[in-house]
Amino acid sequence: MQVDSRGGLQSSMNVTPLIDVVLVLLIIFMIVTPLTQHGYDVKVPQQTSVQLPRQAVADQIVLRYNVNGTIFLGSEEVPLDRLASRLRELTAGRPDRLVFFAGDRRLNYQDAVRFMDTVRSFGVKNLGIVVNPP
Image (cartoon, rainbow, N blue to C red; front, side, top):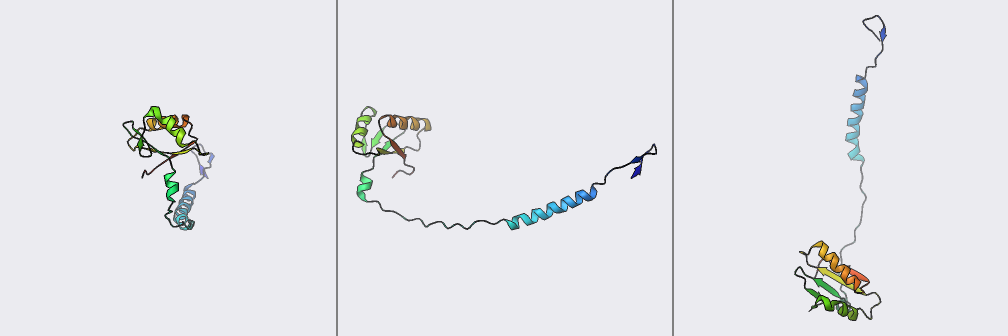
């Protein structure tokens, strides 16, 4: 306790030892924390190459759309006005109506989505996206 200029008692807490203790604890936690972190051991299966039967690969319908607007259904070039009828012919006997879409890398995202919406409006139920075209 200290005495002020008027003769009264002035009480104030000395926080220096408290700050020293907090800094020491902070340093201890900074040193101990990286030592206590443990990761999980994960066993990832090895990559295997699966050989699909040729019939399964031949039955897939792959629709390609280029930047210049050309549309390929498999290896056949199809104009947009005939695309609906060709898709209906190819998906007629298939209950899943699965078509794979492979867009050109330079294709604008908005154009690709519009084209996929157009294909869906032609009666395609499931539209898969090919990430790495063959």
